Image 1 (cartoon, rainbow over the protein chains, first blue to last red):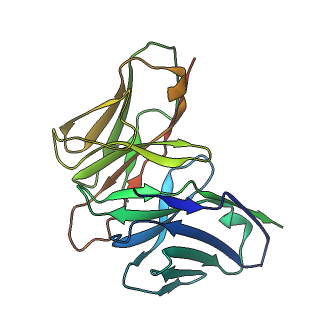
Image 2: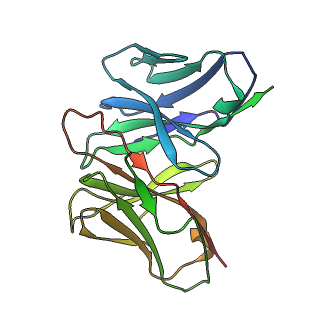
Length: 112
Length: 115
């Protein structure tokens, strides 16, 4: 079955790098995503990576995909207090409407 | 600016009540989704719809039903609310366009408490 796992909590100091890890099970996933949820808000897409890519960089964000190990990571460089949020890893399942399977979410706490 | 709106941010209901959660999107998206979010469990898919009057069960449909009479509106119905349905409910929509990366756009959520 489909399953996405990620660690539940990460605490870093402002200015440090944050690395959030995720493992998934469905090898047919076409896209993998990182969503961000700020307090009291819905989820917003932060970045995504197509399954035939190894890496994607977008300003302070670097996504690494190891398809063999089914491992996805999100690195946030120079982490700021505004990055404090819950980060969800998700994989796209090729069914009706491209269903997404989400992990439990990683709470990122940035200490100033 | 794309928007998914949900009818209430907070809702308190009593056990046994019928509850309607409404979601509207203004992006002409074909797909709409209802999730519930619980701490440590992430988002779990309740139902989704890929067209008007169409619906598909997600991973946890028991105790819920949905209605999609118009393309822009997707309603989640709790026929007889129970305390274990206390949760945050999130609605999302996405486009079927083949060129898109299938981003789902989320509403702000409805925090439902069932007493």
